[in-house]
Image 1 (cartoon, rainbow, N blue to C red):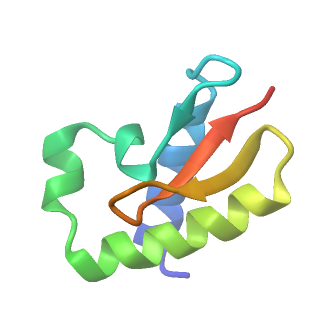
Image 2: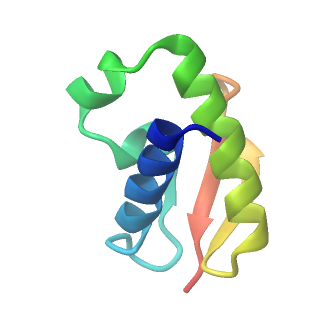
Length: 78
């Protein structure tokens, strides 16, 4: 994991703390639109894999089904 990926993952995880319990979201929701759009497609994909692995280990976010656009959904659980 590169330093920039680690920083982005930390920022995304910090944003999950602002969500309400039972709120569903995709990774993109955790970033301001222009910041997400400035990330290279490869960087978004790498961050997606890292966030999925990280969320699977944590108890405050649940990995749920993918949406109709094939984006991984998550749910804040506590």
